[in-house]
Image 1: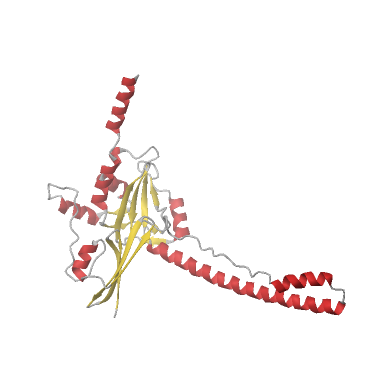
Image 2: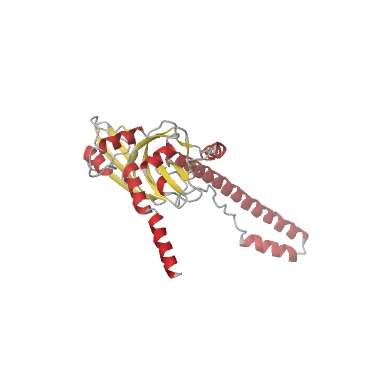
Length: 303
């Protein structure tokens, strides 16, 4: 019995893919490269689910629902950086431009608590005094004062509700904007677990080829293949001759091109590190945003 268990354990180890190494190879091959979706990508971490090898790899009604609920974060044909590839037990996450809004740490609720104006001590005292007062004139005067205090409190509540409604609208707009800027992702799903054959760049490319243009990745991979020591090493994102950065460049390459940043801000977006940098240039002030050290967007403002 023990020999049978030992043999089973060895067999299991022999047939189990080395996920860490496979994921590392996928990340080295794809991350930092620029691709273009062939369909609009929803602004949510749910992204687009792909089921390779099935009659309907893409569930279009569910896809349409996510677009309607979250808006379009990436337009069809829009160049975007592959920011992360993650292998899970039953799917492969292929994250674009940040992976989609709504991951841990992202604010998705627009609700703001509505504070109610508390009853004043004077109101409480008047309510108690009215019950004990026997003089009709005094009792009427106290009721009128109590009504005025209640009206004042209701007006305060109305102001509070108006402020809350305004704050909620601002928060909704912020969430909508962040969804449009947070990227998206493909989830390559395997209901029985990710098979070893799926953990190769070729398999990922095949699974997504109908929905994602890998032209630049394939071109850089071909260029990198000339190096026998590392056939998966992508070509270096060298600074362009025009003097401006491009999406997919690494932070050191951008700073080699533009010089040190004049302003630096770092924050966490879920598990990702987002770095914002501002650079002075002859064309104007360049505001750039990096995800895990990869340039995903920038804009130029005149000084």
